[in-house]
Length: 263
Length: 288
Ligand SMILES: Nc1ncnc2c1ncn2[C@@H]1O[C@H](COP(=O)(O)OP(=O)(O)OP(=O)(O)O)[C@@H](O)[C@H]1O
Ligand SMILES: [Mg+2]
Image 1 (cartoon, chains in turn blue, brown):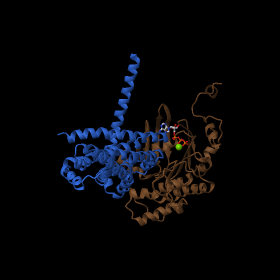
Image 2: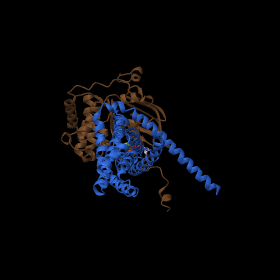
Image 3: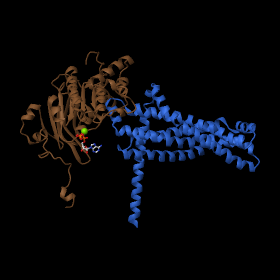
Image 4: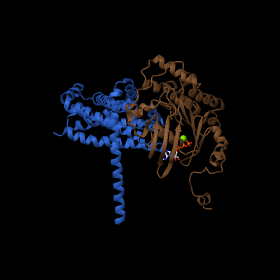
C-alpha cells in the first residue's frame, strides 16, 4: 500500500522534474530564437515565405470554420433571444462572442492542428535527416535561419487569421439571423456598433490572438526541434504539439479573460 | 576548376589570431591528442591521437559503428570530447565560442553520409545556399559559381530537380558540390563512395584528388571502400574499438604484418576486429 503510494509519488516527481526541465529548455530555445529576429527582419523574403506556409495555407480552414461558427451563433443566439423579445440584439451577441472569445480561441485551435502540426513535422524531419546539422556545419545557425522566420510568421499570421475568422463569423451570423430568420438588418449592425468597444473588445481580442500565436508556434517549433530523430519521434512530437498547444490556448484564454474582462 | 577569383576567406575570429595562427606546413591542419569520447558507458574513442596533414588526403577507415562519423563531428565542433585536445589550424575547437566556431566552420566543408540536402530547396539553391548565406556576391556570380560546382560533379543538368527527386548517389554528389561552394581549407567526406555506380565512383575519386591538388584543399575521407580510398589517400588511420589499430601510408599498410590491418585491408571476417556489436554468445541468446 505505502509502497504503491510512494511509487506513485516518485513517478509524479519524476514527471514533474522532466516537465520542468523541458520548460526550461523550451524557454532558452525561445529566447535564443528571439535573438535571431533582428537578423531575420532584414531578410523579408524568408518571413514572407513562412507567412505563406503557416498563414495563407491555413486560410481555407479558417474561412470555412469562421462562416459556420458565425452561422451557428446566429441560430443559437436567435433562438435564445427571441424568447426575450430581444432578437435585434443578435448582432451584439454574435460580434462579442466572436471578437472576445471564439475568434482568438477557435482560430488558435485550428491553427495548432493545421499549421502547428505541420511545423513540428517539418522541423522534426529536418532534424532527423541531418539538415539542421548540415546547416550548422555550413556555419549557418538553424535556430536563426530556420526557426526564427517561422516563429515570426506565426506571430504575424495569428491575429490576422483571427480577425478574418471573426469578420466572416459576423457575416455568417448575419446570413442566418437577418437573411433566413428575419432579424432587422439595421438593428443587427447598429446594435453591434453601439456595444462593441474598440479598446475593451477588439484590442483585447487581438492581444489574445497575438499571445496564442506566440505560444502555439513556439510549442510547435520546440517540439519539432526537440524531437527524437526517428519517424516514431516525429509522430509523437506532432501529437504533443496539438495536445499541448490546445491545452495551453484554453488555459491561457481563461487567464487572459480573467485579467481583461473583470469589471 | 580554379579559374575564377577565390572567395575571400571569412574574417578570422579574434581567438584564432591571438592563438598565433601557425601556417607553416609542417604543423598538421588537424591535431588530435588524447581524445576520449563516450556514448553512455561505451568509449567510442579511448585516447586517440590523429594528425591530418595540410594539403594531404588522410583516410580514416574502420568497421561500421566504430565512430568515424563521430570523429568528424568532433573535428567540426558539433560534439565535445570528454577530454583531450582537438586543434584545427591551431585553434582548440572544443573551447571556441559559438561565433568563433561559426567562423572556423566557414573554412571547413563537410559531406554528410546521408547528403543532408535541404529538402525545401532545389539542387541549384542547395549549392547556392552557403554562398547566399555567407557572401554578398551578386546573383550572376552566384549562378556561375553554382553551375561550375555542379558541372564538377556532373549534375549541371539536374539543377532544377528537388532534393527528393535525386537518387542517393546523386544527392551525395550535390552535397559535395555544396561542400566545395565556399572553397574551404578542408573538406571532410563521410562515406563519399557508397551508393555510387562505377562511373561516378571514378569521377568522384578523381574529383577529390583534383580538388586536393589544384586547390590544395586538405581532405579527410571516412570510408570503408578500401580500394578507392587507398588509391588516393596519402595516409591512412585504421580505427577499431576506440583505438587506432594501424596507421601509415598505403604502401606501409600493404606491407605490414599487423593482424588488425591485414584483416581490415583484406576484408576478412575472422581476426582481431570483431564483426559483431558486443553481445552475449549466440547459443546463450537463442537459448540452445
Ligand atoms: N546520438 C547517439 N546516441 C548514442 N549513441 C550514438 C549516437 N550516435 C552514434 N552513437 C553510437 O556511436 C557509435 C559510433 O557511431 P558513428 O556514427 O560514428 O559510426 P560510424 O563509424 O560512422 O559507422 P558507419 O560506418 O556505419 O557510418 C555507434 O556505435 C553508435 O551506436
Ligand atoms: Mg558514419
